[in-house]
Image (cartoon, rainbow, N blue to C red; front, side, top):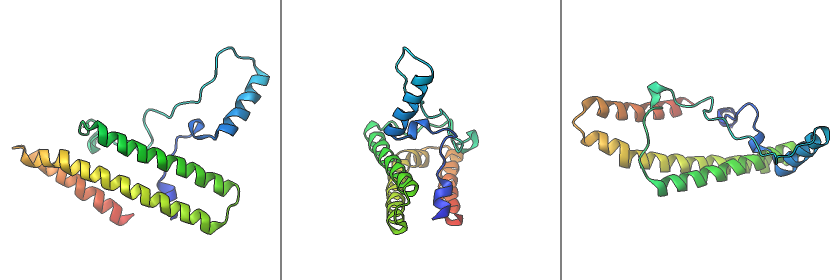
Length: 156
C-alpha cells in the first residue's frame, strides 16, 4: 500500500488540489492583506510532471487520435483525482483506518481500470500499426515497451 502512495506524485505546490473552503480562506486572507481588483484564480498544474516520460520513453510520440476514448480516460482520471482528495481529507480528519484503506483499494481498482483502457487503446492502435508496418525497429520498440511496463510492474 505504501508503495502505491509513494508512487502518486503531485506537484510541489498543489494549489489546484485544495478544497474550495481552503482556497476561499486563503483568498480572503490575501485579500485582507492586499486589495486586488482582478478575480483570483487557482493555479494550474505544472505543464510537465516530475515523472513525465523522457524522449527515450516515448515523450515525442503521440497517442492515437481517439477523442471519445481520451474523454473516457480523462473522466476516469478526474474521478480518481477527486477520490484521492477525499482520502486526503479523511486522513487529515483522522478517519477510521479501515475506512481509509477501503477507499485506497477503490482508487487502486479505478487506476487498474484506467491502465486496462490505456493498454487496450495502445494495442488497438499503436501496436497493431507497428506490427503491420515493414519497419522492424518500430515493431521491436513497441514490443519492448510493453515488456518493460510489465517487468516494472512485477518488480514494484
